[in-house]
Image (spheres, helix red, strand yellow):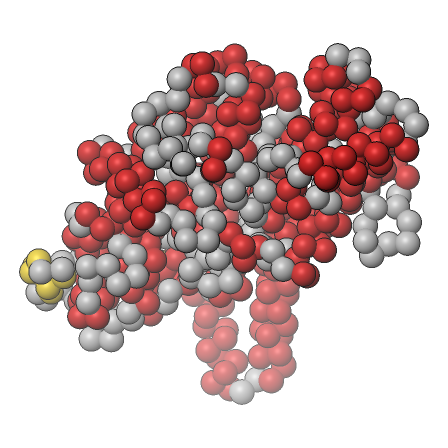
Length: 497
């Protein structure tokens, strides 16, 4: 029977298993040493350590890290040249202008790939894993895609926005999203005018971002919300309110009438109880259990308690997340190993948990794309479906090959591997195995599975793996450990966290 208690887990219940579960869900896994450090902190200390990451060093993010001018607007002189070329039908000049546009397109696509690799590296190396995990959550919640926006710097800028407000106030983040160039472009609000409002942003703000599909609003509310958002646009990299294109007349949204603008629209929908209910259900699926039918009637009390806390704390995220990560329910065995690793989770956790080298970031970027999760390129405004949608016959093959590549350096599309990539320092993992076995070689197979798997493998699979380890004729070190790891990561249980 699953525990629905939101009471805090006790110190007596806190151990390596519960600490590892917290690190998997509130981060991207960790080494045995990192798990032991959390155990020593106790449940409250461990949760606070992950959530209060602002006290820890961070990688500096500079506005000049990427080129913000690749997609800059034309200046007056350039616009005049284009107009003159079109007016005179100067084919040579028009061809040169098109050539320059094509070059900028290519440069921006290349920079988009660099931004993807930059975020992968940050997730791999960060000492503040929960910050990156929440940034990933918001990226899936307020989903925007580079293929539509076609401005790599705006995607980078939005990523910084999510990181800045990762555990801040949800209401403030919603207000900032209404001013985000990437979102305004993605949902066509930059083209929304008085008398010709575009409904995309208003619809998704209600349906996908704040209230949830079909909750509390009508089609007329969407139309009125779209009018409130007219004039919300951007210029270059900054938000711009175009007062001349804003519909300043009276509007009625969710029963409230006034000369509302976009901020008023957001305030009105955030005042509804449905908004906290909706967000807490999404948090639950992301951090606790995304199995079929979850959350359902069995866990309604859990999401209700979280939503009540969110309203009580006026949409501050940290108290709600602290309540969740300290709860008995979060650590119930039914919730451990119940979530299929997303492609990004699988990639980053394999590196951080097993201590394998990241190899080549371009290859990792391609692999996450093949597995169905290309950063900055969600399939649509709904984001990724997650859960069982991550696994099919095609993606499972790639998931297994990715693990082999990280462990051995061998790419599936190569006949042989680069020997310089194949070797890595396995001493930390060897020490973790030794600490669990106390010198008993017969326990090494179990120790490795306990380290790598979030849930127990069936007894028959454990026995088969033990027999395989015996054929290696020696302790699990070096190449023998690498060979054993390849087999463990091919187990179905390795796909879960």
